[in-house]
Length: 376
Image 1 (cartoon, rainbow, N blue to C red):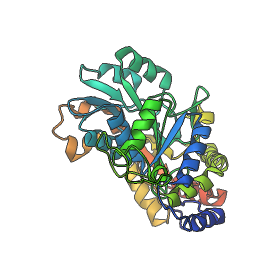
Image 2: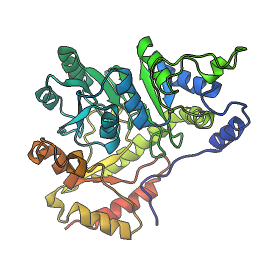
Image 3: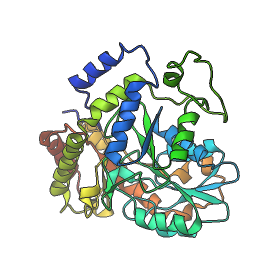
């Protein structure tokens, strides 16, 4: 049996919607995108949603729109995908790495300890689909007058205190990469409750132009527009927007299927010596973008050897993520390795098991059985 780490669910409705969108006279930044943005605002209960080319650019544009740049510091978790750091670097600012806590999310206490006069923003990452402690993080941000840009790449459908993630900060940034809980293949979305920020983001994604192509084509002088700030070409096209609309219709279903699959793993593995399952105290607010277990010494063999042996059985697992401070880019940083004991420990123990909406109990049993056979 072959069990991939993830299989995107592309339905016939998805395919039909794409085919229909291809007949549109405007294939980018048009009415379909506006509809997708409107539906996303409604889902998250945010005032504005701005579709962009990917999740990394959602973060990058947010930083630029909020005035974060050269000479500034932005606090991010050490345990995250490199995109979070890249967005900060692309803005001209410096990423300041902070260790995680037992939830695998950024530690609010360590955020507080790493704030300096240069700190201008915090990017909390809702790792694997579980919300960070946004109550503490927003309190810290308010106390120090810091911007908050939520990295919600893993967490569409995740709530904290009954509010959708992304609505606590100045902006919330989502990714629709193929492995995410909904996909537009590539694509992203920024949400905000600030009209000023939304207007700036809409301009920044479109070369800094004051009017969109849709707006210009409604007049008899479509070449009349202004450029007040330099911008980027980070628009979201109509094809991916229509796929997003189609996928949104199944979001609750797909997230429910993920949760059920995660629950099944947890039920089967919870009493296993040497395996620590995800903390499920907040399961209602977890959308399980990933299902991450931790392999303890008591299991009897290393995480790396488990991965290799499962791979030989056709089971694809991986590790999310290699801590940022371990990459060459950060080697010369003044932040030393011993500042990140929790992310280092997690990196050595964590293993992401196959998880996707249509995974069957039979497939999960194959994963579980082969995993448990390795216990010494």
